[in-house]
Length: 304
Picture 1: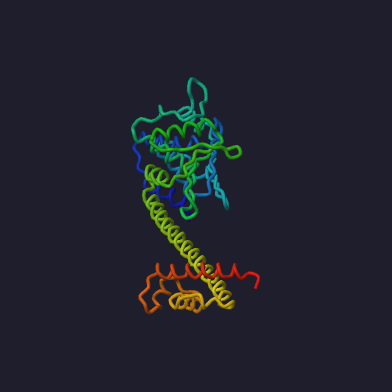
Picture 2: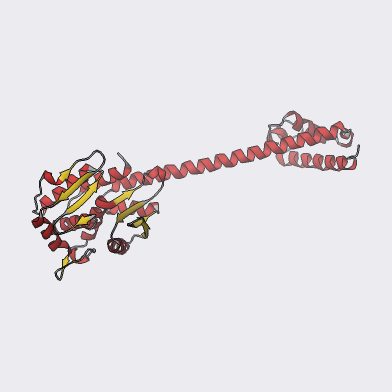
């Protein structure tokens, strides 16, 4: 299963709600139904467990629906209730205000401090998505009702989460891209184990990125050093071909010959090959002196 499916399964498995929170949990689902009226309620999901879990929520609040409201598909499963008495009751209990249907999130339905948590958990089960941790960090809620998206963003903000809003086609989105915020939201709505998995994956990803950057840096330095060494060798050989050896002291000649015969060695490794205890810095100084002498000599004899 996907990481998102695992998160939703953990939420459903761990859900233990009192009466008020149970209603708030179902309310979270209902607000994100793509279709809800006095004659029909509809929700689609790739996850059959979510559809069956939704039916159990209706049963627990005293509205038994039976399995006939579930249609199983190859990719999409559907919850569809056309019982007008049930639909009218749901509208009356959750969305009717002053005789009018109000498709918005009303905190008047929250009777205790945990109702908001239960509501958001239901909303996530109905319309939430979280990306695979190894692919990036993204959690979103999607709805075609802009007012519902606005109310959810305000509710999440009131719980201390920093969320953003956007639009994708006809859908309004409420989303989070910060990994720490996603971890906190998953823990908040009842998926702490998945939150820990996200933390672990983030650690692994960060370490992998650090190793990659270090290796890339070392490879770049190595490439640069090898390139510099071969440039030196080309310069020194041309210098010697034109009779420049006589201009160098014995120490500089040894350094030049070591460089020519050991193109892949670092400065420290070249220094270790000498018998006079020279350091890496000393070897660098000698090679720099040879370059200066060689370039000056070749510039003077450029026409020869």
